[in-house]
Structures are given as structure tokens and as C-alpha cells.
Amino acid sequence: MLAEEKDFAFNADANRDFIRMPYWECERLVKPALASIAFQKNKMSFPARRTVRKELHMRKLPGTLLLVFALSLNLSHARQHPTVLIAYYSVDGHTKSMAEAVANGARGVSNVKVKVMTIDEVKKEDLLTADAIIVGTPVHNANAAPEVVKFMAGWPFEGAPLFNKIGAVFVTAGGISAGEELTQMNILHSMLLFGMVVVGGGDWTSAFGASAITSEKPFALSQKNVVVAEQFLRKAEGLGKRVAELAVHWGANPK
Image (tube, rainbow, N blue to C red; front, side):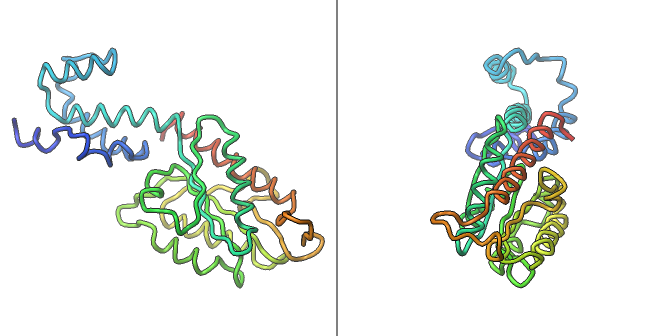
């Protein structure tokens, strides 16, 4: 076996990270690999997965082909079933309620996997494998909560692994004009530095993302088990729905 073939020899355990990559990362790796084996393209057909595996084994083609095939399978699946990650920090339950509403909106879109996690639960792999990331935070002094700032500061940056992922934000604030839009824009600006494509909510009333007012009348609620007014939950649902629809659309119409 040639040295180049050894480098690319397929091993399910060694290549598990490739198999779970977002589809655009698969494309980035598949394209040069395909170019390097273009001279073999007339030797084989791709009628079915089982047939391809059999042909690859019998012909003893370079291991690169196996990796390309595995990546292409993941590419197709990822495009059809994008993942929307909703990562939030909540103190009094307001932002958690908004996160659940965002998730409900995203789940209303077919073929979308929705993951709702607190920022403490999110791992690097969750960020890398998500097609869209929606961050939720309460407003603290016209900015994101310090915990959320620290969370985003720890996102992987080298090599731009979050490039072209969809980004969005939702916030909860105590009063009207108490910093909700400033906080939304700060988070969106941070996402842009990671190369993400940022989007707003479902209409012009949530242009920068979803937000909720929780302490100022008439939005301060006293009903038991009601922490966020219904009109704000609808905005959160609209944000989740739009992000999920875009993730599906991008998957069906790759860049």
C-alpha cells in the first residue's frame, strides 16, 4: 500500500469525527479528495451503498475513496436533517421559558433536530456539529449576562470552525428600553466575528431576534406558573421557526 493510501485508509473509529461533521465541512474535505482520485471515476459506479463497499473492497482502491464515500453519506443526511442548538442562561426562569418557546417553533419544521441546553451543558462538539446556534440570555446592565459572555469567549475560533453556521439570539429584560436591543446586537456582533450568518425573528417586530419584558407593567405577570407574556413567547417561536426553516433551506440548496 502506498504511503498516501495508508494516510487515508478508512477506519470507523479513527474517522468518527469526520462522520459527524456539518455538511459544509464535509464538502471542504471531499472536494480535494475527489480531485485527487478523479482518474478513477470511470472505473466504478455508485448504484447502492452495499455495492459500492463491495467494489471498493474487491478493487482495493485507495482508502481515500472510502473516506469520501462515508463523508458523502453524512453530507446527504446532514443536509436533510440539520441540527438547531439552543443554548441559554437563565436565573429566574424567564430566559428558560423563552428557550422552550424557541424550541417549539423550531420543532414545528420537519426534519430538524433541536437541542435545548443550558450554557453549562454545551460541549465543543455540540457547537461544531450544529447547523444553527441560538443563544439566549437575560439582560444585565444593557449587556449579556457575564456567564454568557464567558461562554461565547470560549467558542472555538482557530480555523473558523463556526464559519457559515446560522446564528440568532433571544433575550429577556426587566423593562422597556432597558438594554434588550443593545444586548441582542452585541451577541450578533460576536457571532459575526466567528464568521456566522446572523438572522432575526419572524417579522419586523423582532428584527434583531426575540425579546421579552418581564418586570415592567403591563408585562409583569403575577399569575402562577406564568413567567413570560404570551406575545413574547410567540416571538420566540417565530425566531425558532425561521432559523429552522433557513437551516433546512440551506441544506437543500448548499453553498
